[in-house]
Image (cartoon, rainbow, N blue to C red):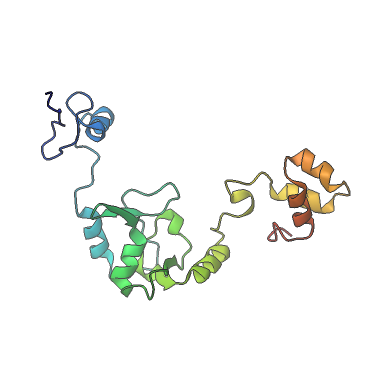
Length: 191
């Protein structure tokens, strides 16, 4: 019976992948020349939050560690990924009133990894949504990754005398969407 080879990094325990390392350590070895490089020491992210929970400044306090693709501050606690601004809000303002409450940013810079406790508060999803609209951070219209249209297309649709079917074919969208745009039931934010 063959024995399973393990990563050569002490206390790793993951299965060998290449050059004596598991996938994660091999990836770090390839990138930095050291299988342990690029790592954040365990506990340093939480320690940073604890050090800044009483922060007094008014400027945004940027998260110095990893962020998600959307720009929000990310943290791993007890093997679970969570949002750093949510943890900071707990440290500064206590537990949320309900599990559904969001840690809302008054600065509108959550997508730039702001963790200033003075910019955070517990808000209902509806309140947080209103904040995102106010700050212009909600991905609607052409900011949405799913949008086929631009604001210029929407203005053209509303001012055009062409049929809905002709515009739909031209722009690669449904006749229903053309109708919703003309009746201002879709893309309401475009004047």
